[in-house]
Amino acid sequence: MMWVLANASGIVPLAGSEADAVLIGIIPGDDVALHRVDLVETAPKRRLAEARMRATDLSAQPLDDVHVALGPPLADGSAWLALIGKGRMAAHIYHFSAYGADVRSVVPAALLLPAPNELFASSATLGELVLVRSKTFGAATDPCLAEALDTLPADPPPFTSVFALPDSLPIDLRQGAFAPRVRWWQLLGFRVAAALLTLAIVALAAAPLVIAHLRSAAGVAAADRISVQLASKALGKPQASAEVAAASLAAARLAAEGTAIGPRLSFIAGSIEQTPAARLQSLRLMPGGSLLLVLGGPAEAINTASTRLTAGPFESTDAARVVRIAGRRTARATSDAALPVAIARALNVQADATIVRLTPAVPGRLSPETIAGAFAAAGLDTSAGNPMRIEAARATVLLPLLADLEAKGARLVSLSLTRNEDQTLSAEIGFSP
Image (tube, rainbow, N blue to C red; front, side, top):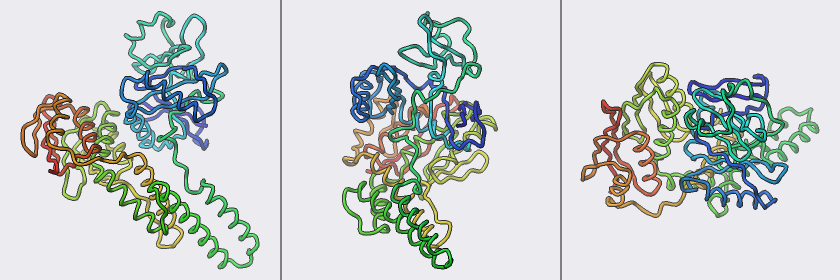
């Protein structure tokens, strides 16, 4: 395994080599709450349900907005429980992928410190943060807050000098909705088809043309079967064919999230937040539904933010400071042959099924009064009328708010954001009546 540490400027290899097939990502964890909890249940599903009940009491925000991860049982039956905002978790995965790291697992740095002794918690420094691991909690916090803990040793060492490879991961944040996707060739149906195909190859080794035909036919059948099964489960009704399944699921995704302006805004906010020196200079909703961004800040920060944005799950192009973000990425067949087309279709069905499953049904369009109330609750002064105007708003408040409104039924028809001199944003936002 190769271990890589995320920081503001990219990723840093800590252990292993590039030849290792499995990548483990380490995050500082200043946005993760880590608790060691005692659990009664032993069955995996019941244990996770019990952990989520505990998370309800430990979380400072609604559990629907929180990603809950549970570590493996320890010797005394307890386990590490991690709580992190779903948007922040997605931003971490984007960060690793932006630098070419397809991490299998993500671990907070505090849990990779040595086990604490009876008198003192373990601690180390990581950049401007202090990592803390006690018997009951783990954290990455500011030095001034760490001083309030009288069980910490003086002058903690750097994290890289005490980091040690564990025998097993104390917790993996990539679980549940954030678990690595199972590739189509790893699915049982495809493996069975591949095994049968291998036997056919051995039996027909003297007939290359026939072998190629059977290989293609078996692969197409396996991929199409996957498409039908995934769509039938996501839509709750059987699908007649892979083509019908893909079209039905794409229509269901479009109905669930519309033009996905909200998810794109959340992705933009998370990506720029990961690069503190970069800033959003302006943003406009263009004809056709793409979002046109102009980035500001030092050249290096702009390049870093641009790389993150273009490496995300949306089609995008960049030219210096300007980035255009369009709809969701889709898998494309490498040729018009049946097998590549079937494989690309199965990958798109898998992505659409995940979105449909995770996107709650929208009860209906939001009224202008409800929309205005949401802005007022967020502390934003708006002008009357449609489009509404906002003189000053922080990007970290406005962009997530727009994403939340769209998820609840609001439909944006125009959007223009421009940075003010005081680093806030002025906005003109039009909603569909």
